[in-house]
Image (tube, rainbow, N blue to C red):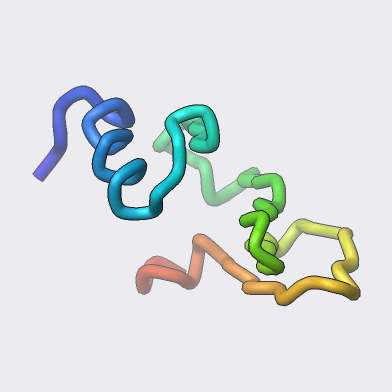
Length: 78
């Protein structure tokens, strides 16, 4: 089921659930077709000692906990 008005539909829920402000939420859109052929995402520093790192990342985080996230394998698609 598709949700209307994405991503705006979730901002208030994210703000309430995570106790963060709208300004702390960033959003980027990627084309749905063919994304797995050339996807590149920037690592996300969550600001609490954790970083979400993607497969193409060359960054080294010696003083942080790193969650390695591969979108191709995350949801049974790869």
